[in-house]
Image (tube, rainbow, N blue to C red; front, side, top):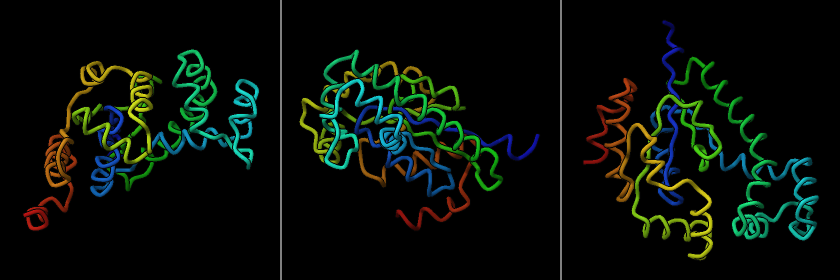
Length: 216
């Protein structure tokens, strides 16, 4: 067995605002290669073919003055109607999935990468979890998730609820996961959980022995 065959892909799942970005940052500090779906979702809507299909379906009213897709306008439409949302997913998911596949393939082929992390909000809905060796559920209470999401994106509670309804129920996400991390508290409370997980997977970071001095 070669060293590269041991490169694991960890998939992160959880509710909107659960703090997956905080967990990915902690894993990246420990040597993980992050493959993120959200930036690719933004890029998918900048592709000429994607813009053309969006305009064909929803009209030029969803474009901004520069001719780019206004994501908030389009989001208000697709998160209010399941059929519209599915049509948008049919436009962007194939491109996103291909990019994720290529980035994960490159990570696995890189001898310097001990493990990769797939962070994609709709991973389970899109079927991208097939690329993962382990699914990690990120837990945070709903009121905290709403607070974080509204602060980050400027959404109203109604906008948050619409996006939440568009995703798989959290009970199902938790059921499908292999392990869970509690991200309801501070970063200092999360860090030891990340270290324990990596130790269980045989991915103990070299810096782990010094972490006590950093965090008291």
